[in-house]
Amino acid sequence: MATPRTAYEENFRDHLGNVAPDGSRTKIRPRKPRGPFHRARVGVSWLLLAVLFGGPFITINGHPLLLLNVIERKFVLFGVPFWPQDLFLFLLVVLTIVVFIVLFTSIFGRLWCGWACPQTIFLEMVFRKIEYLLEGDGVQQRRLDKAPWTTDKIIRKTSKHGIYLALSFLISNTFLAYVIGIDQLWVIVTDPPSQHLVGLFTITIFSLVFYGVFARFREQACIIACPYGRWQSVMVNRETIAVTYDNKRGEPRGKARRDGEDVDGLGDCVECRQCVQVCPTGIDIRNGIQMECVNCTACIDACDEIMDRVERPRGLVRYSSLGRIEEGRQRVLTPRTVGYGAVLVALLVTVVILFSTRAQVQAVILREPGKLYNELSDGRLSNFYSVKIINKTFEEIPVEIRLLTPPEGELIYLGDFSSVPPQGIAEGRFYLALPRNILSAGRNDIHFSVVSGSESVSEITSSFLAPHDVGAP
Ligand code: SF4
Ligand code: SF4
Image 1 (tube, rainbow, N blue to C red):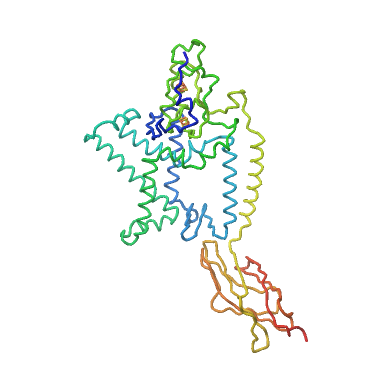
Image 2: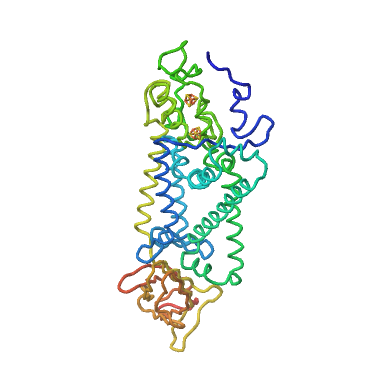
């Protein structure tokens, strides 16, 4: 006999998996996941955690792998420095990543959420594992929650939350290291706290936020807060590969039998609800693709274990698509994926070209506003200019400004202006003297070249103002 479902279960699309019929939050205590997918995810998670925590210590040619110092506007990606002046390039890279995510999601669904998202990894592979260790499996956790406050319960709960707070503090420090750099962080950590009260306050706030997310807010971050999760409905389609229940094979569901024989025309789902009990977002995968599903694969492992026991083939819940289950074929190249792919290739080509031609030194020369011209004692005319040169490299560079046209001019620097510090800016002033007889009245075009060593790093067009009585006699 197929098992009837309650009205609340039937209306699964009208409420969230972690919300009870009375509207209160249902605390999800999933059963410990186990199986080949889980083991693979543990391996991937440890690798990614090692990269995340080791990242601040990794340097390329002595420079950080990743530095996102928004406070001082210093950015380093794979050892290459970027400046706020590279904003258009940064925006283009962000746009490329967004298109890649849309394309990837339309083909592979929420693979990112289940396997690589820091929220899932920290929650399921770190915080939840500590909870299992100290409070037992889901059922035991529920029992402990309802139990009176004994010494044992107090020790377990305080130990868990103490470890959670320590981990949150460690995570905050790691993220801070990506912002200010590991050297600066080390200074803050080793100096007396009184010298870095703002930093300490910031770290405390972030630690409490992480603690709140991983100890309290939990799956709601994926269901309510994460924009990627909310956009799923517009990115996935019937060909998207996701954790999917094979309803053709599983329905009508009904209670278990062991011999693997077809009983009363029932499908393979034995209504054991193990797939629901392991789900960290509290949903039933048999209801089809749902916004709450983070594709963690726990239900695949749980169902495969049951299929082994009832001697049915594995894969009643598996990575598949609606199209494949209903029509028996998998299409990857759909008009949508081809369109996204074409846009992505165009963006990638543009990004590569712009990256490879990106100037390492940028210069701006402007005629000083509000000033006209001066007449020098030898009869020549002069205009004042301000110059700003940005050195995006990690080395000090020599610089020299040369006048390309007209060649008869002379540049006179005001102060020393011969080099730009690494990752720094040099600003200065100079005036340009030109003979009257080569000038026209009003605005004259002039061209400068900014030279570093023997290489011209920038050519700049500016103007020279002259009075109405100039020109060849
Ligand atoms: S674990 Fe498999 S058999 Fe059990 S209820 Fe879920 S889908 Fe059905
Ligand atoms: S439905 Fe399955 S894959 Fe989706 S979140 Fe729940 S257990 Fe994970």
